[in-house]
Length: 396
Image 1 (cartoon, one colour):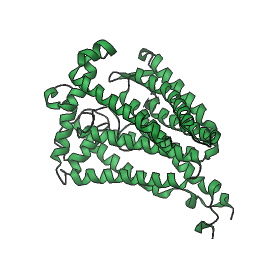
Image 2 (cartoon, helix red, strand yellow):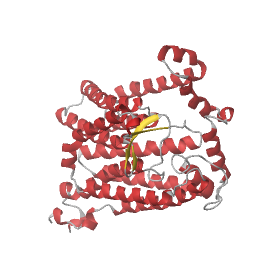
Image 3 (cartoon, one colour):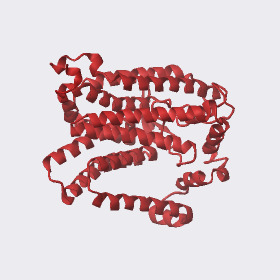
Image 4 (cartoon, helix red, strand yellow):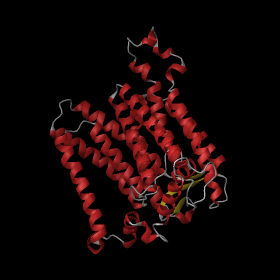
């Protein structure tokens, strides 16, 4: 059988498309209720529908490129993303080209809304790092500690440029996403545990030490490393939000009150009583928790588990190492976004301003995720063309 003549229906990932449509429905319901808070006068539902339409076009465009073309475009996309990050940092907001919001210069102003290049750079970085890992393993079939150390050095150099530019904006949330993606790819790349254990152990120890010093040795951090008092505020307000109820702890307290007041079954659609700022973007989960309660919030989390499970199945199906690494990076990116966003609304993690994938209102986030999901669609779409198994029952 000529695999190139397989029908579109057999090659298209319909289960993934259905999962995304379910996210669309939940997103529109939550946003339509969130906008009744009166914080903004805009109706965000039509714009979110437009964002999803643009995202669908991105998916449709990206999925028709086969994995070999992704490989050729990996580094050009990476350097294009770097150029965008440089531009958003160096071009002053007074020009009207970039936008300064909430203390960060991270967006370009465009006719379709503000666009954050860091959201697209996440996928560009995944492509480049996946290509780097696959070519490194191809050139070094016999793995040793030396080859693994060389791989880590290459990955570190690939990471440090976008990470440094994003920290200059500054954007802590996106920086953490890049670190999470890198950590996942190090594990998936098969780096020996003789390196991973001391490396990850050292990182966790350093993080714990910095957290301890932020609480008990603020003067040392300020004088030695140049930390500013406002940078400790998120840590303090996370650990003890009620002592900062009128300032940095306000968002967390209102989020906890909203989710807790939903109890088991929630207050019903548009039945919210607790005001939560930015509840259509970063705190959309607070709306879900208050209106749909524990049952509804758990259902949304299960929907994410279903998405991650399906992406994992696709990753295991693909035989090409490059495709495997790309899918693994995308899984890590989405998983960390979900864990961090939901975690910050329930005081499990500090507030970092990370949106909830496919649910929060926002063009950049949705388009960036669409670009990533488009790669998965494309790799699954072209899988039977390039990796067709002669024993596959669909060949009969």
